[in-house]
Length: 321
Ligand SMILES: C[S@@+](CC[C@H](N)C(=O)[O-])C[C@H]1O[C@@H](n2cnc3c(N)ncnc32)[C@H](O)[C@@H]1O
Image (cartoon, rainbow, N blue to C red; front, side, top):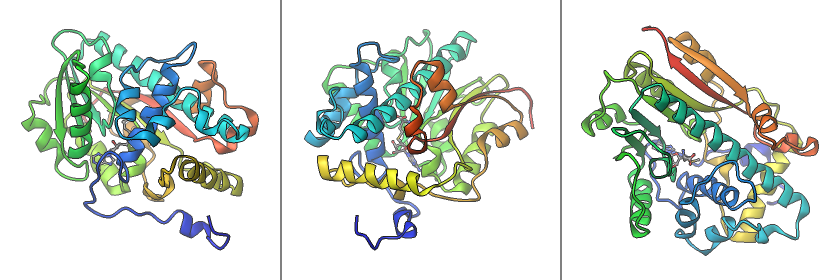
């Protein structure tokens, strides 16, 4: 980071309409990053979640990624603050994964047999959750991302535990048509998931996403969403922490990915809880801080400002609009 760089430079988005990526490029790399956290958690002494596919999915992308997924965090062992901050990031990913795993279990227990994972990335739930017989899991993401996941898991003889349908389409395009062409039934209740997705969509695409999901949701459908705070104060300390994270990945692993420039920092973005509540969904939401504390992974006081602020929500479609 050069001394002359301003905050405006720092948050300038590198995104463009219609851009696409492989697993190691642009937004694709964010899927590797969160899967690496799941690999670290899976190897912990008392893991909150188990994703036995995360390690191979990350390591197959190259040596630097394999190091990011190494449970001992050796790549950052001589930087105590950096290691603690990274550990909290892994804790957050573990807690969010746990929240959405439980969501799917409850949705299936309620009788739903159709799931759609929006921006599935390296999500391996189709392979690792105990789906009831007759369940179909649709995974939407960009073509090269889904191709990488399918190819890697096939090479390791992984077998889905539900009927898995990969739907290779951009979520800024006409994804409902692609989903229906893949066999999706809009008249049956669905369990939707938007985990790690919203910041990477422009605000109008987020609106369209929620509109489309609502139109395709029979009564009793459910949705779970990870919504990042729109109001969290952006202090200098928070900005410095983001820059430090970027520098750590670049200098220690050679992964030159500035996650800040990959999202759309769009002030017109709708609040997910409010949008869903106003469009016929009954919402239950929890802050990431509360959920992390509840699950025994509280955010240390001195790292609160450096840690993501989000809302984890589950909602049920209770009324036609
Ligand atoms: C942070 S990753 C999250 C992946 C997965 N949900 C998880 O939690 O492991 C973001 C994912 O969003 C996907 N994505 C972002 N924008 C997209 C778009 N416009 N169309 C399709 N996929 C998109 C990326 O390819 C990437 O796999």
